[in-house]
View (tube, rainbow, N blue to C red):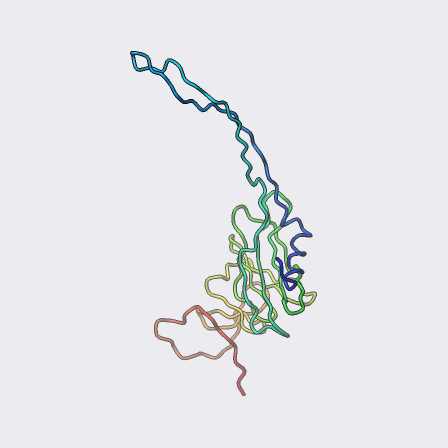
Length: 212
């Protein structure tokens, strides 16, 4: 975190204790034997020995990392990155989603959820205004990157067939239809039926294009 552009992102993490690291030190005592003498039966009859003390340190509570990132496209007013990182189960630290504008520089917390065991929330597609976040137990969130609007929660796994199109259109890449931005999932009649693609519509990078 040496660069000034990262200061806001660093400070936002440090203030929540996410970079705190707890080290535990353990000591052990043992004997190191050498120059052992065997008797006629082949058994050790005597040895020289040195008693030693060892000190071992390990991270009992490691710092939290940012595990996933997406570039906001198009980014309004400059570059914009969205991060997601896990909290710590039992520590009171939640999974969180952050948005970072390196040109300003500024960073802020967008969303927090209690961590889910060993699993983390993952980022899906990110537009200039909205980020899609998936949870392991088949729930998904559409999170505004600016403004006071709360996240939109869907009790569905949107990771396999849904993407976001600018500015915040929920698009299904299997049936080629837009869906309303409110639960339950509800398909709209748009767009009109498109030409069939051999082998089906691939899941990948999609963009909405305004036409006359």
